[in-house]
Image (cartoon, rainbow, N blue to C red):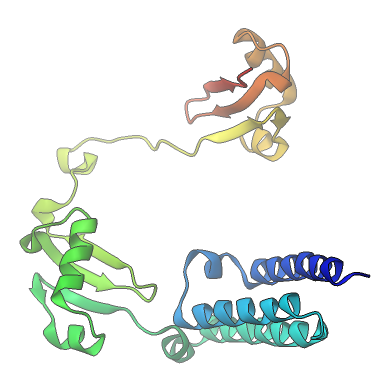
Length: 227
C-alpha cells in the first residue's frame, strides 16, 4: 500500500474514531466547554493528528491515549454529577461580578476580569448602561449571564394581567420529502391525515416537500422544494 493511501485510510479512520469519542462524551461537551472539556478536546486533536501525519507511528499509539482520555472524561463527568466538590474542582464555580447593581471588585480580581471585559460583554448582551443591571454572573463557560433590574426586564403578559397560552413546540412532519414518523406520532396524527392536508395545499407527492411542520394550533405549514 502506498504511503499516500495509508495516510488517507488513517485519516478517515481517525475521523470516525474521534467523532465517535465526541458523541460518547455527550452533548454537554459539544455545547459547553468547561476547562476540563477544553483540555480533553485539545489533547484528543493532537493525539489524532500524530498517526495521520506520520505513517511510521503505529495507529494504536494514538488510539490508546484517546481511549484513556475518553474513560477519564466519563469518570470525571460521573464524579461531577454526584459530587458538588468534584464539580467545583473540575469545572470551577460561577462568579458574581455585579451584585445588587454594584461591581464586586474583589471577585473580578479573583477571576482576572477587567472592567473593559465586563462592559464589552454587557454591550454584546444589549445592556450598555451598567445602571440597568442587578446581577451579572460569569459562568464556567466564560459567558456572562445578566439579570436586569425589575424595571428593565422585558415586559411579560403576567405584568399586564394577561393569561397567554403557550406557543408549544412546532413539530416537523416532513423533511426533504421524508415523513418523520416519531413527530407524526407525537402530534397524534397519522399518514392519512398528513396526505389529506398536503392534498388540500396542492401537494401531490412527498418529494415536492422541503419542510412541513405542525404548530400548536394544529395547522400544517408547508415549504416546497424549488426546481
